[in-house]
Length: 167
Image 1 (cartoon, rainbow, N blue to C red):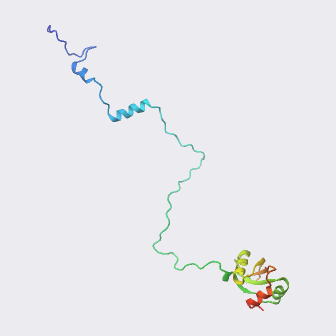
Image 2 (image 1 turned 90 degrees about the vertical axis):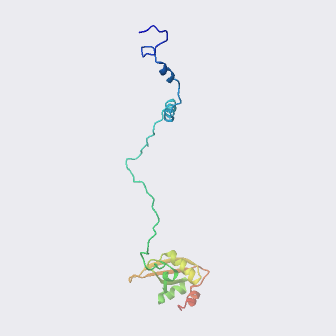
Image 3 (image 1 turned 120 degrees about the horizontal axis):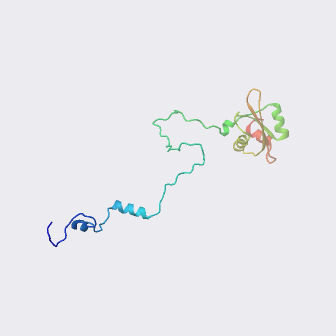
């Protein structure tokens, strides 16, 4: 080799080429590398697993939209279930019913089979403007329901019966 005084660029142990030394200067890292570096510096975070307290799995309830049919499935509207005229069908005008009107201030009616005592009480109040103390009901052997409407002391069953047209 020659006896020149300039250093030689070689890749021997402990020596680096001149160009390699220049490229070793610190560079701006790539954005993804910055994220990784930040994550390495930060605390380790793990995904939290959902705690299951029940052995049964229930299917999630999905969105239920209101129905908007193209045409009505029923052509006719259903009539009102119970109104005052359907509840009280007619007064009973037998001798025993008349005796109850005169003696114990009680009116007797045939009523709808599905009518309750509260329904009967409300219907009598609306139709005849009288207050009921209590209502007793029974179902007759022919399948119709009979109601004994006991009026309060303020009203007289005989007057109400005259107004209705029983007597």
